[in-house]
Length: 248
Image 1 (cartoon, one colour):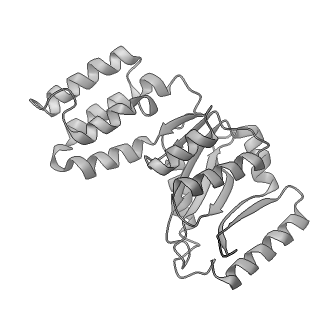
Image 2 (tube, rainbow, N blue to C red):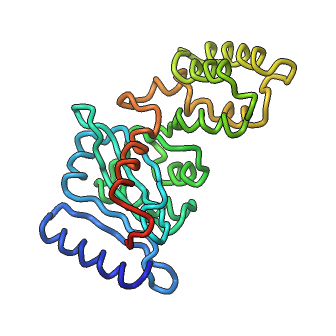
């Protein structure tokens, strides 16, 4: 992070801390003592997490600053089912080490209280960070991202019939036996003659089925959250105010 940007941001945070006793921020520095990543949450965010933080959506977005640093957001619902931000960060990169640092700062900020459930995309580095820092939290995978990844990975095989069958597995199966029956039915219908898993991408999502199918997800508290579209909505709104040519 450029020295001038970092200095201005830290000055802003110090001013906020004087105005808001609940303001929390932490920085990660690299080997040259330059600021690599920054996490922050104000008093209202922390209070909202205390009341509404059982289920969290976490996502990152790019193109919000000229350094193309990922902007990470922890968001959820309040008691009126309105979007609530619990914390934010500018990250150096999206490696497991960076996510572990971020999740540890979030945990410290929130008094050591982990969310009951956290929903993310399928990024392996995020999953590893959650296993390390939030081992007791249920990690759910975003249903929207799974559908989008199906389109990318399956190409022409991903037709409306397949998406309908996949959606049924996400939202309508009741238990493991129900899932296995309908999974086999989907494979036989959409990928005839290709074996029990049908396609290499399907093998991957089958292995993590407990993170996205209603057969398992419904047994965990999620406040009606099954995707990171809450985060995507917040990110979309932010892009109206933050542009890639802006400095941090």
